Image 1 (spheres, helix red, strand yellow):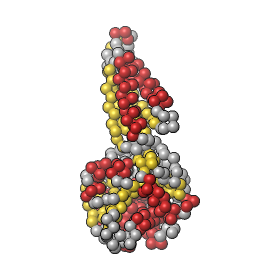
Image 2: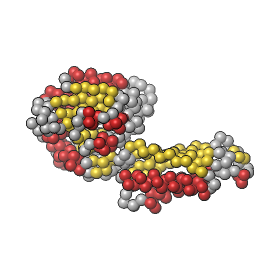
Image 3: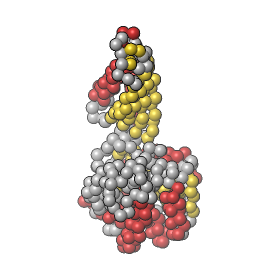
Length: 388
Ligand code: NI
């Protein structure tokens, strides 16, 4: 079963929505116009129930099948937010808002789910319900968590959830996924080192927080090589180190911050513990004190085995077995669909974006040729998981 005929017919219309969303990027939870456009189109399609303001600015649409006694509600999720950066694609539909850009393809994800919504509202050839989930604030705002915390899963009786992200360099017309962990946890680390300031020419009368901070950074880098199973993965990157006001003053404090990425919860818990121990004890060895704030932001994105195998079968039915990679390697980026996968069984998969610039790059653009594949995947997933 290749791309559905009716889906191919919708290609131009969906491309139009995608480009309109692309021109008007909005950030985090401030996706009011995008959410209003989504809700307006769902209404036009005749979606049975439309609820706005879920998880602040998320939208959920419910489509009832021709039959509705399977007890199943399949959640399909797209993200709506853009990034705080300036666009350099030179496209005629480029961002009209300086400093905001759809550089992660969430415009494409939203448009594809709208396309699936239109198709499924027309056909309703399934036994059960579809929950169309349009979330805000994927880029660092935990909008997925906000929707789950808002009771979305129970309120709409969602039984399984599926999400899709475009993947640059993966050819258009291909899908990729894996069982288990696909993406890492994404946590934030802040360390404040306190010493005793004074004249730079008289360090013996001071306790230098910069030297202590440097030692902490060096020692933290031994964590991955000495504390974690070499076959497991962890990244600890200190990305900010702020201290001091002048060349001849030893400051009172130094501030460090960075990010921690892990592929499983056990390692994540170990990193939190060890990073805190290293920072406080190394600071102490230099006569300083350290305060550590470890903020657990996004959990790892872990695909459920049964659901990702099912997603793989659906993908193969759309693009052929040779075009589906069931063993794509995990990467250390994060994704807040992870919160939905903690709440319900499901899978997160990649759809090929072809030879585009990378995600979060100013020259990146979602590839409209991927649209029919994404919509067909969603539609077939609904048909086959809830047959009439
Ligand atoms: Ni993204």
